[in-house]
Length: 68
Length: 132
Image 1 (cartoon, one colour):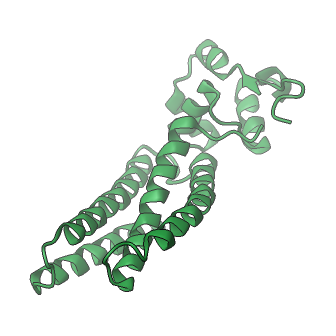
Image 2 (cartoon, rainbow over the protein chains, first blue to last red):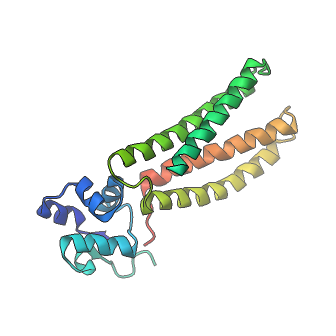
Image 3 (spheres, rainbow over the protein chains, first blue to last red):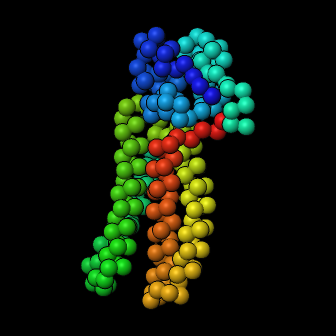
């Protein structure tokens, strides 16, 4: 799974800390997400997509067959 | 906040126990005891670092723990359990070969489990945890 969080966050002019506070997680979690070292829960993915005003599938991309 | 208090309280209890043990002069001063005492201090340091991290996050208005920190803890715990099984097998296999009383061997094994957990936690934090 990959994501566009870093790109969208930069576009929205948000710092990692600000995004973390908006979705109720630690800044460290945003760092892990941007580096692709963590896959969020559906709830967190939904909250992040909501901050950017986009559907989940435009923020997170699922690679077919990866990890199966 | 309760968990942070518990972390610091347990750390303080372990430190107090160690201090009492050393002040009573029960430390023989051999290499094995110095190593296990040092290990206990490292583990207390780890607990203190965890507690301080939680406080720092709270000060920044972030939750003391979130889904990532919980997942890291769960993953590290399960991994540490798995590795500990092999560690105990190793301890049992060397049990007859080292001149240590069974109590010391078990104590060292328990301390070893804590060290295994510490390394697993650091490893999961470094490599990340992905479920897909």
